[in-house]
Image (tube, rainbow, N blue to C red; front, side, top):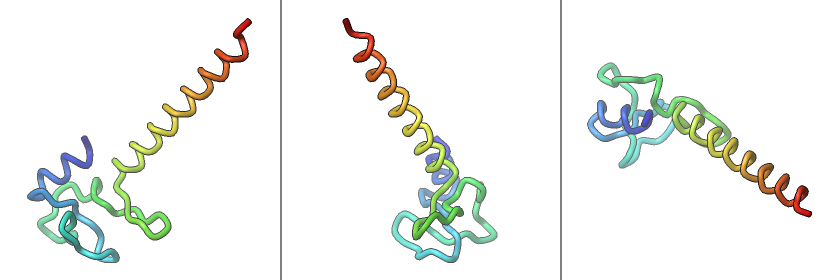
Length: 79
């Protein structure tokens, strides 16, 4: 939802900081860019990510860990 929102208000393109390359799905952040704080502004390794990308990955990590623990506990308690 966060990524979708920032792309909608910026004419369908994800704003990205000037350190990264501009491409078909990205445009450089400038004075007309809206919701800059939701754009691809966080550099992790060689990749730029948005806060929405990070929240999504944390959510998936929590989901998979909780499901793994649930299945593990279910197997252990099986008589």
